[in-house]
Amino acid sequence: MDLAREHGLSTQAIRNYEDAGILPAAERTVHGYRTYTPLHAQSLRAFLALAPGHGHQTATSIMRAVNRGATEDALRLIDESHGQLLDDRRTLQAVEAALRDLAPMPQERGDTFIGPLARRLGIRPATLRKWENAGLVRPRRDPQTGYRIYSAADVRDVRLAHQLRRGGYLLEQIAPLIAQVRSAGGVAPLESTLREWQARLSARGRAMLKGAADLDAYLCARER
Image 1 (tube, rainbow, N blue to C red):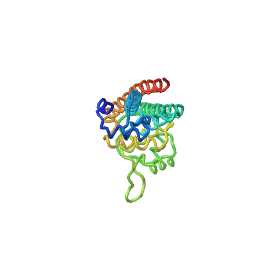
Image 2 (cartoon, helix red, strand yellow):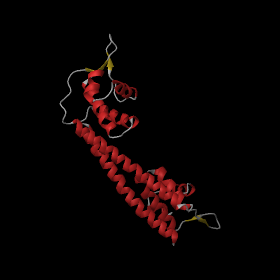
Image 3 (cartoon, one colour):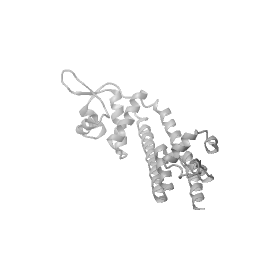
Image 4 (cartoon, rainbow, N blue to C red):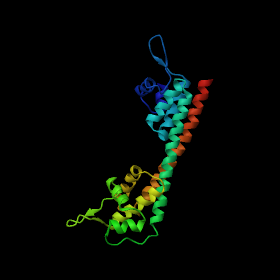
């Protein structure tokens, strides 16, 4: 099948795409064979271009909407996907800003307790306890007194959480970022991760542009 060979796909994959609504329904010959046209080829190109930027599931939903004539639904899905990319960019910018704010501070030394740490940051001890419950920080306990003891790494995590909270981010958004700092072994090794994150966002943005161009070509072909 020419349509499959052009994109390095199997004939079964093309049938699956049609069954999923990614391609418009094909006409059948008198013997029951599917007949694919240049319009099907344009539809397939649009889907394959949309998938890298929007993800397979969203790209499928977009093509299904277009093929059932619900163009407005397809455009709404595209807008939502762009909105998610913008949110991801803002999150990255917030993390970068928070890390910049941490950089000029002197290296934390020794341990501290919840009261002095709260006063240093201008927050209440209850806020630190809330952040602990949310998994943002994990101070150890003194075995005799039960007091929370914050290590230098704990203070780093608290300060990063404080910066992100000031930026308007929710605890559930901050927790995975703090976990990434911990797994990276600190703030400095995270810089390469942030560069990779930026590169992925840029690639998604470019892929969305490519997908939009091919989808517009398909929409024009359908109108003709």
